[in-house]
Length: 451
Ligand code: SF4
Picture 1 (tube, rainbow, N blue to C red):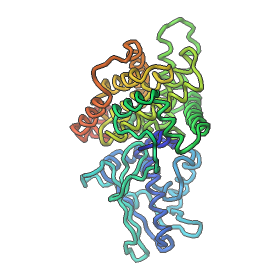
Picture 2: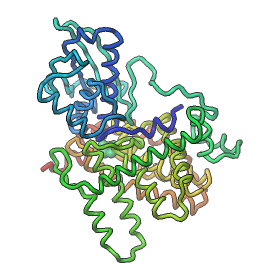
Picture 3: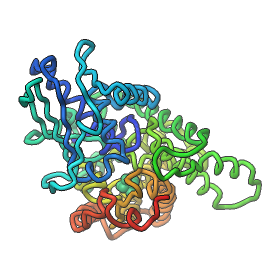
Picture 4: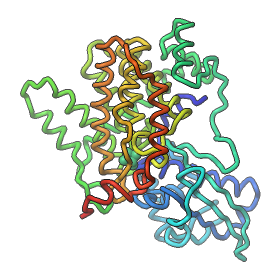
């Protein structure tokens, strides 16, 4: 079972599946070259991208993620400025540094191949890495899949997850809730017991607060940034102007809190769109929802506390794990319901938990939030994580708060279970045409004029 810290990971934008995972895959391939002692013989590396990575990889920074990974960089350790420096150096000199002594010819145009023709079978995001010697003899080939939320999986190998031996391992929401009932736990208690097999309680809390600090810094960076976002759409950043307008507006409006929530989500996703430092929650495209809803808890609800923040993350993480293990958190696999839909569901459950709601209310909130995201397609305009993604995070945040409130008013009485809605989301994703699954071949992507 996954730890919550595999769901909430610090990385860079704009996409967990298309930037973060390719970076990890590139780094992994480089490590293979080292381990197999063939790095110094390597003279050429080709990377073939298939499926959604081919169709939207350019706009999502897949090629850049790959060269950063091949240069030995990890998503959690790199910042936007360093990554731009490395990429500029490689594209200027047409040389990739594999080690201090070993540089090979490399250009994005020649060595990163976008294969639009080969249909993908097992997973929608495929990367094939090939290394050759000076005589063009193949030294190594590895096929690696990006399976959503920054996770990768090698062909014919199990997914490389943290080796956990959790005392309360669960494979469904029912299973999790039954264990909570039997032990008189809240969902957050159960998750804390699990996480304490990897870290002690203080460390878990500190790690959670680090994640929250990164999210909060991202909100602030987004609010302070001005100008246009990277990419051919030349989308103007809105967060700083919304912030100014909200500060200036002194009128009493009961829904003003919602405008602040939208601002927080937009600020994070504008940072993400420009390759900034974000926390995948559970993906980068949907990275604004958890921070926006948590900030709402801190700023607009009574008696918010550090303990409430910890409960929020533990519970939202548990819900994220349920989706990751029983369905998908990949837009390329199930559409945006797997990204914004899952983030909305996680945030709704997390908010109820922070507000000290019951387990039934948490389940209900998470279920409502997904039920009304079912069928949400992924159709990013120009292959960029900007339209509809940025605004969609604002909508998802408001919906999460609404779901939490409805669940708490209704005392958690509900007919549809969280397991049922997770199953439905996965089935809906399978039935969805590939043009709506992060290929930019349908929906808004084909109907919006790009300039
Ligand atoms: S539409 Fe949704 S799933 Fe697709 S790239 Fe945007 S945020 Fe991600």
